[in-house]
Length: 175
Image 1 (cartoon, rainbow, N blue to C red):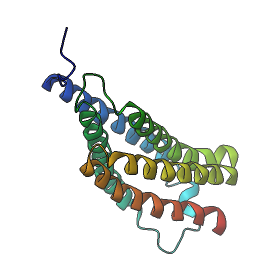
Image 2: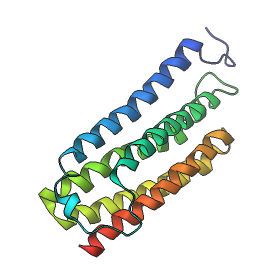
Image 3: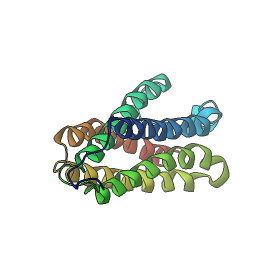
């Protein structure tokens, strides 16, 4: 039997890091698949907010954000083993998982949803991104107790989500 104060092995830490990187990579791949035909389809002809960046900006920004999202989750997971064998941050990690799910839902609903549901998809995506923003704020505030670095890493993600929400809202309002 292992003592209560034993922490995860290096192999387990690496496995969790790879798992989190794989999770965000799957979200990125899913998002790319959902946008692939739509960026040159309905989205190309849609009226966008005047502050919309060129399409090429989104890939690099999201790539960096996905890395910091994975790192933030890993830091909280690792810190959850401070004084016990069982991870004490599981509640916060469930919130982290929820924001990953919401993040993964937004792109397909916004882009691939429009040809199926019309403007209702844009509004549904807006509700998703608002829920995601609340979840990220909640996770970031909770992360402070476990890792200030993890909490700080959520700041650029939150800033981008607020920006993305403004872009999302502009689409149904302008179209």
